[in-house]
Image (tube, rainbow, N blue to C red; front, side, top):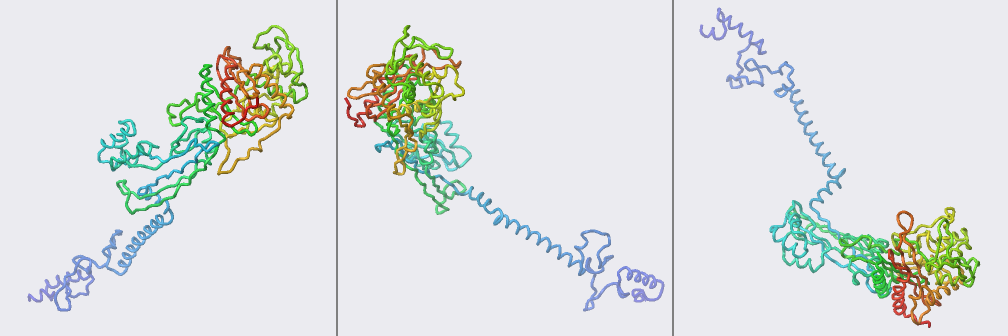
Length: 627
């Protein structure tokens, strides 16, 4: 009976159990056999959740719509879905990796390589040796020598006190500032650039790790301040800033090289690491027309004249009138090219080129050449010269303040430097002719000089003339010109009427420079000879007697120009005193022009300076006496 009850046989209890079994069959999906399955050995096997029917379990996914139910799915479809998702994730990851690899190695490879290199590669400039500048006789005026830039790598410095002590001691830099550089959170700080090799060696001998050196170049000047305004200066990167250094910068500069080395994380160079060197190409050497001995004489002469006359400044140019070669050029005060920190910027100007003035009576030689070249008069043409004459609304008088008229030839007018007489000459020339000859001489235009910052002055156009224009210009007022333009004009008179281009460069790459293209005939040779003859009279018997040199026939002309003020008038008692001369008059080899600006003295104060410079120049050039 017990067995019958257990097996669900007949009887009330059996019926109940049978019904229960039937319900369980419907629930579990079994075929009516025992609720427990048996394995092949006959032992009962319990159903496991998720793998067939367990207690209340099911072999199918739940029908609640959950997105994650497929994770427990044992069906063939569930396995395929899971495999596809995994493969999709792996594929997406692989695709992103490929894209990133493409970005690194192809699309932006150079960018990433540059970033990496910037962190580990150190590039150092190998500065080209700037071209040497020589005078006409092969004397070195300026050249470049190797030096060192001193810098620190604070990451390598173990003893900051020792590093600061030696840097301050040798380089004389500020101690507090130096300590800031030595202890900064960086791997590179300049301490001082362009340090002499001897000083760099003193620092290197201390053997302090973290103090390092970079090869560089700097300009040296064997003759000190000589010709500093002509030569000009360069900056710490050896780029021309002024003078011929900037005018011929492209020739002189050369091409810098480089050296690339690999650094470690601490900033130190890696032995056997990446290394690449590109050698520097040195600049071109230049030979100038200057003569160091004539330049020395000119600088001394004008400096003495400035002192004697209490002038604000003075200038001088010495040139060969037959070629335009400038043998010397200077202004006073001058400056020290190795001490720019204590230099007045105005003293760096070569004023014969960069400044413009009313030329004063020196211009009377040019006006005389106009009148003679036009055939209007000769040196012996006579004028009745009044004590004063009208120039527009103003009265013009002579420096001697005479109150009577005089009979004067053109030669006498020039000898006495008569303002009233030259007004008469200018009126004879006329406005149209006057304007034409100003154009012939090239006034108001560049002379073509190979120097930066040339002033062109102020020259009125013909249609801007008024009643005072020609009369005032006839004695050197009402027109503003740089001294180099006036020197070129008078040099044309000395050279038989042919003007040459004033210039400094004589040869480059070992080849002479041809400046003949700038030659231009302005007046006839006979005119030039006549004016030269009158200029000799000025030195022998007139206002230029202070420029006479024993043994030589000197042609010259003095000049005194009133200094213009800001109101458009003239400052009383302030002048620009000047003197222009060339010798030998019969065969000119040297022309000298000196100006003394803002002085209370008249032209006679400039004559001794010209005499001193010219006398030495004639001797240096070996020009034999003519008298």
